[in-house]
Image (cartoon, rainbow, N blue to C red; front, side):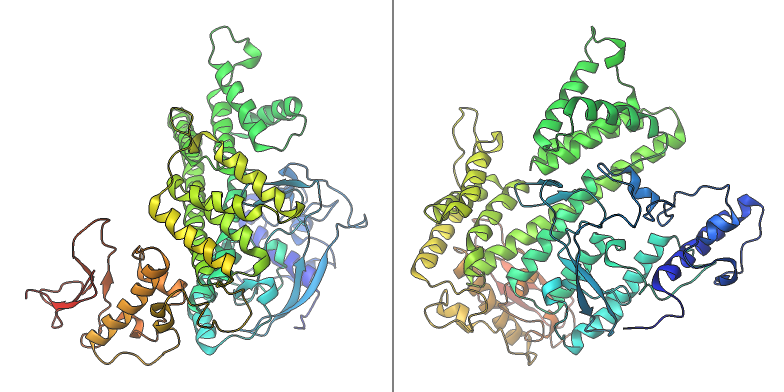
Length: 590
């Protein structure tokens, strides 16, 4: 365990206090300490240097702590937060030793099962909990170098290429993010070691974004990568549905939250909340609405932002964007310029969260699909994986493609015991939602190619061809096709010529298409994620003759022979090679 000159908690308090001094010193009329200097003589153990120097200046920054419970003041606005003394019985916390395989830092990782009744779970298993110490993140992050991984894989050793990637890419970005978290001003105060931060203090989105980048770099199996992407999508949804505020919005939030609390009686179900907010918004626009039911522009803005998050939880992305649009109109009509800028900024921020959620949902669905097709999903998780592919496709708007997967999940759930009944119920309720029904009330038709792919998968699962994760390399029966078996998975010798590179890429594309009913990969990263090729095997996709990266484009559906792998400017490139969609290699201009 790394030793510090004083206890970890005091160090964190000292750092936060010193930063707050820098920010507030001019206002208080007291000279702040020199940049980069923490004056340890002015505080005793357990005391906050900011409160000592400025007792009459309340501060509500990210790390300002409550004198009663010792937790950040910002957390007191969370729904259901209970302020209590540290001497009170703590929530159940399981701690495990974590040793960073990159920088060697030892810290305590938290493995906490969210207690029953402390929150709700969405249809894609996103958990919403109450209370800061209730851990829902399945990823740990080293607070010193930023290395992140699923907690059950965290202590595993990693290769030198991963260590180099973390040092060059992950660590600098992580320090910048954590510096912003505690309010560092680079020109006046620098700090290069955040190892005192505990896991709940680190925002989950940093952990998951780091983990996703690292898993892609180390070519992790598709099942683990899918779990990371799924967890990341949940992080951004919790951000969309978490407590927020903006300039001039405090009064609107207090009044609307009081109404919601009184009428909903603490009902956490998103459907009930969404219906009530819609009724509230509709009633406020009626001519005969009493004054008590009239809403100001700011109050309507707050409700639309809340409603956007609720529809996101329900998997109704079309309503989510409409709510953002309504909130944006209200923000643009705000007469106070400062408030208007603040509200518009809040809409942009939440739209950014939604965009990242959609990206990770798309990536998770693709990874789970690959893992199922290659037999890399543990037997006990196959039903969940099949269901999640369908649910995630539905959430990103791919309804026709989602239907075969959800129907397959319903088929797999039959006769598997009471513990599988929940999935069948989820499928039944999901397929009955308006998104899956046409104007005549009938279910929309399924995508034909996707249905054929899912049927092949179900057949392979029934015959035992799909290989459970962790059972060793696949045998001949487990391989989807000879082409998949021939894909250059382990070869790391870069190709000598551009033609060789293109042949290797075409083999991987052929394996990908064989497993997906002829579908071309959306990009080259999909081949890497599927484990069908490695960057080393194809020389980072760079032409050996020119050293320039080749570009890939997915051919349009139903198109005739067209080029798919090419140089950025084949007219001026010394190498004229082009890979066509039928696997042939030609020369530009010939």
